[in-house]
Image (cartoon, rainbow, N blue to C red; front, side, top):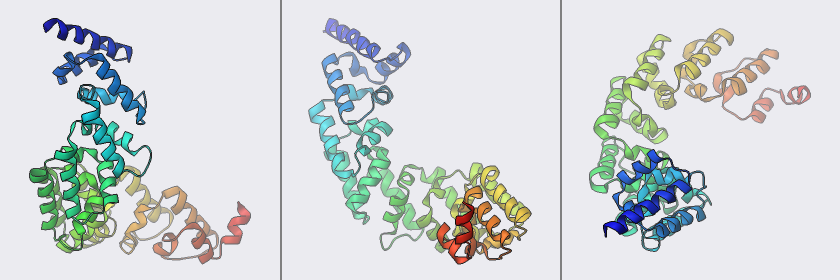
Length: 335
């Protein structure tokens, strides 16, 4: 028996060498998965070729196997194929399954009956459609590894505590940001909620923010939210104005100060000659591209000596903007 195990181990070493793995990576995989020492090279090769056949690129396979060497040990027809076929019923695009496996190879080591089916049922109880469930799981395949009782259900309870407990609100939040289900309530979600409350957001405000931009709840308070809040205060915004900005455009608390917020505010004040508090009426000002929209449209309006609000200037596509201000003909001639 020892000879067989030693022989298989040596055989697998050649298997990995032939596929470009270095010694350090191979040893790491043997430590992660002791069963590799006893697996036959034929099975490993069969599983490798199957993964390639479902669309995983050859150059990505070493990374997939390094993350989850157990994939080479699993029974192909009893374990891997059933999971892939089940995932195919959830996908709508050709490369979605391969992409999900590359993101989280361990998904193939989980049971369809014990893990995937209960997960599908859990999301259905939240009013999420089958198509949306597929999108959620393929976007964040790590969901299959979480316990429904001790992880996912607790996140749902946390979202319900914000008042998101009717009309499928929680389902809408999860569809918008499937990654929110993976964060710690005590270390990330609750501290963020408490910070937002501390700067003046009410429960209805939190509900609006959660529905429109739930990703804000998974950001680090001290590293991201506090610096942005401090910057807005430095710009002269009052607390109630910052609340209006956050509710109107939640990403304002996570956008890069140096690359996003500061250049736009400087352009607004120094170039456009406007008051900084004009953005209170149109927080989505910070959403628009500086060069492709703000600078271009300001230049066109200034050339005709036209004045308008920020929303009139920005809240429409290019054609509507040109038509609204009678700029269509002149713009066409200059291009």
